[in-house]
Amino acid sequence: MKQLYKIYGITGASYGNLSARERIPELSNDTFWMTGRGVDKSNLQLIGKDILLVKDFDYKNHEAILSMPPNYNPKARVSVDAVEHSMIYKAFPEIGAIIHVHAWINGVFCTRQNYPCGTIELAQEVLDLLSRTDNPVSTAVGLKNHGLTITGKNLQEIFEKFSSKLLTEVEMFA
Image 1 (tube, rainbow, N blue to C red):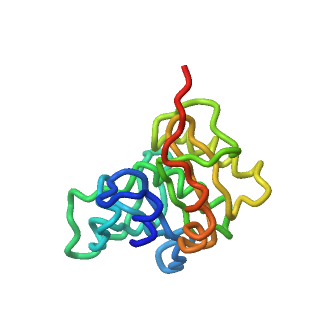
Image 2 (tube, rainbow, N blue to C red):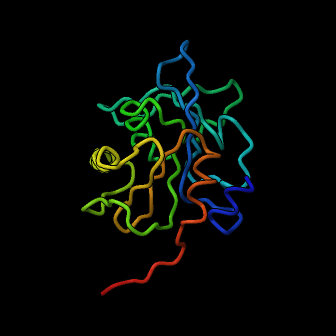
């Protein structure tokens, strides 16, 4: 959590998201933990509310398939970007963690359009951009007018490699 504070430079971050792969063969080949929608990223505590286990993604119905504990909060929802994270984990088995942050790094590949969050179109373009990088397993790609998707072998690697490169203020152009 200290790393999240360093990256965002604030406490109580309720925007952005992060996930970490944990392979649980009994559930699925592509399971990962992901932050919930609108939760305080500086205070992640409750499984089934703040952090959710995504077993898979139903692309036809545009719905994350979750594994929830018995005492879960029925109002809890995984981040809308679960579709993007799911597609990235399936396409790149070596990736172990993903962070979406509302900041910038100069010189990254960027989506051509400002797609809405949580759309398959955005996820597909991010996959295409990752494929064009030198190292999709540990890189950052831009989301036009919306920040970055950053990949790594684990969360610690992402924090160590990218936190010092993040620009939290970007000059606006007319």
